[in-house]
Length: 412
Image 1 (tube, rainbow, N blue to C red):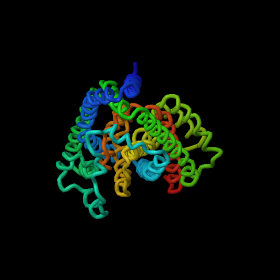
Image 2: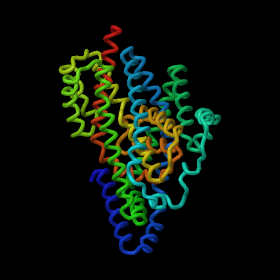
Image 3: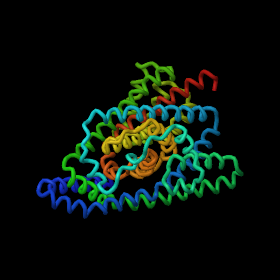
Image 4: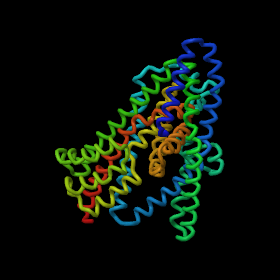
């Protein structure tokens, strides 16, 4: 049985047992929920303990990887800029659209107690913060304290400074330190894999506890989450067409048919890497891009660029805020969007469910949101994967069209 199937089996078993208990005897259901809740919290804590070192290492390594890629030529530098601009646009769109979409669905107040009955949501404890304080807090006065407090945005800012500083020191020392941070990331991924090995038990405990308290409320809420995520994936995928037309100089009747072969592979395999040959063929035969552009930009896009990643992180955070009845401020949404772009660039290439752990946790933490629902969301997030890959492949070819036009206009 695949890891995804094991997690979904744990989710289904916990939901069924929790609903049966809730329907049979509310008192017994509450007792069982209280008994299994610590197991789910323990599993979630085990996931959280890897996030700070993992994100620090990923950002440092990611900055140096992107710098090395950009150093390979003007085409690569243009591609990096295009990737960042498109990712930022997708993140800002998600920061605006996700809360609006969730607001269309009725909120169940019972979810708050069911999700995290033992504590008050972190965001609910935070008063209004003015822009000056928000801006000053971005740069940490003490990076170690920021890490200890899980202040993810200041920690990532420090990691960016550190990553860029490494590009300015002697190559031998730089290589040694990058290898050191890569080793930290690899070690954290091993720990996350160990924790995910028992994910069926953790998810089982979490969903049983929640369903025993809230009945069908949590299942319907997870359905809202999956539906919203799918809608936003389709929206950002559709947004790539005007980008290709306006900034890539493409014509709709030529560009859309060129997308279809790669999109078909993306949906069937749920892998951007598996779609790369089809993208290269479309770029060459159907779109007529020069080989020096397509052969460089498309592999870079698969390695560094996932349009739907920031959309996922912000949709997850907006779902948690909706479930807890928290109104996200403009500062929270902007902080989440900026962090989502940085984290997505550093996390591309992480295996399977590790990506969810390493990326959604820091964004939710940076926005001051509780983390209890993330274990359940990890279990159902495999459902929209095909649409996520569809959006990523479409964005890869769109970014290539923009870089091709820029290279043509400036003569190389």
